[in-house]
Image 1 (cartoon, one colour):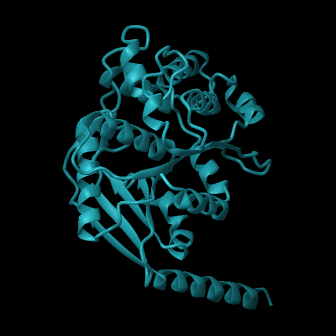
Image 2 (cartoon, rainbow, N blue to C red):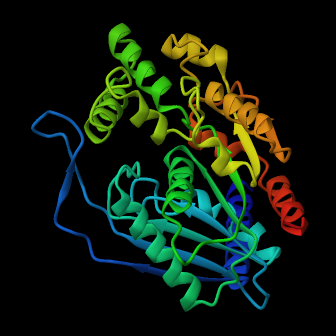
Length: 328
């Protein structure tokens, strides 16, 4: 009986998978791997190999494209389009395309303009090749995927290229916005030595190397790199986002982080997200929303990706459709 039940479940899953494939058209174009690596620390083995730059585009089949959801995902380290795939079916049903962009830099923080130029060039090529409508554009993502979206938006605002996406909204999910705070978090992690320090050492090395100093020696460079910073009295980047619909997902998991990492509320991305929304309101943006995700007791791992995995995607797609119908 158990064997028969498993067989039926397998057949049903296969049916739904095939149905979804037939309701979408997926195109990919990735360049060959470059034989090079990126230094991520001071050790002899602190290197990561380059990844493939390119894109994956999901188009709804037999439907007019009403808008585009954009993810800046690594082609390797985020398991290629892992977050974007969770939106394929829902987006397709509503006539939205889903575009996932990757540069060649592993764990790309978009420190370099070259990364953003590369991403922008790919976006422009995809929009022209597939005749995508430049309307109802939404950037989405957790962790580095979301961080890259914010950096890209700031880059476009500053450089003002001829081709620009008509961005309607941003969906941010449980990632760092204030890199001054994050640098101090990692310094504390290293000092108290209660967790695996690989990430803390990597990120502070990258920040100090590419921003050419620490928040103590070059505070303005950290403020420029941060969409929001509690320590930036000018809040110089807030105005960039004041005309967008912004939905933010946060999973504080305070007790979990206290017990597992001995972290305070200061070492929590929710601090950044709430501060960012507060400053947007002060800047006049009345179209912001905070969704607090409650941690599941049974969930063993809590991070930005697990927060994204847990959110109600159908309800999120409904929010996107509502924003798409709003007049600019």
